[in-house]
Image (tube, rainbow, N blue to C red; front, side, top):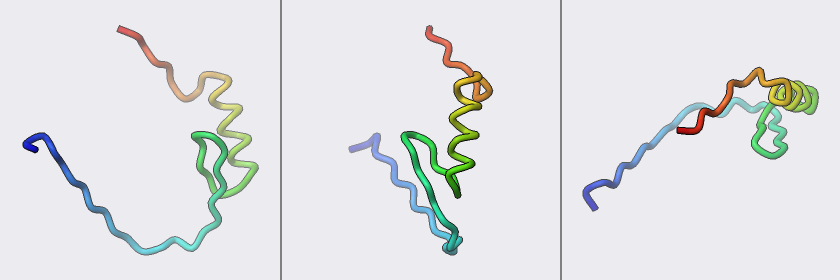
Length: 50
């Protein structure tokens, strides 16, 4: 397949807690709640349909 692309990434483990809820991934529940609030308030940008 001529259109196939592969991306390999590596790095050292951060050894930090990971919390996820829907599309949000943060380090703790408080950050998840803040991200959800910011999203609901439109602080994460908007999608423009063409």
